[in-house]
Image (cartoon, rainbow, N blue to C red):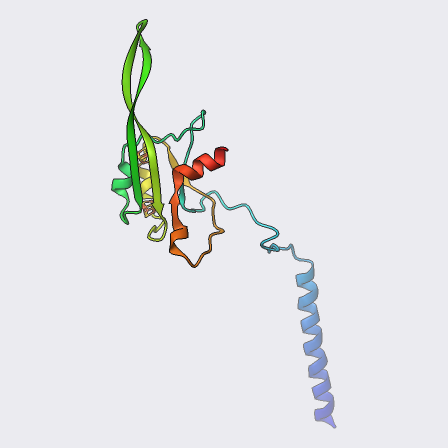
Length: 156
Ligand code: SF4
Ligand code: SF4
């Protein structure tokens, strides 16, 4: 008979402990979101794949110096450029000068370790880490990014 009441007591004790925990958690602030319907703002230090930064006119700030491409330990970056002529006024005279213009900035994100060497080596503030985290695919081709095109799409 004693064992019978002891079991009831233990059962009730365990029930009230469980209810106590549930009650306490019920009033705690919610720390999860209903993804994918809700998303959270990524922290400042979050590193997504790199992306190009544009100037005031919407053009890439990249001057095609090649430092990021050379500095990438995984060989993820592939650049191309063309030389274009432009007119500039020097002491009242129009002069023709040449400059490099970026025509391709490809990133192979499949081998990128997000080390940050490219961002650190850019002296022109032309690339940064994106806040992109929502990447999923079974095809590796989907992680080869045309960053110049992505910049154009962002601005269109
Ligand atoms: S973060 Fe590192 S591995 Fe990724 S592209 Fe930049 S330099 Fe290469
Ligand atoms: S280091 Fe900067 S400016 Fe130079 S090629 Fe890379 S992104 Fe462009």
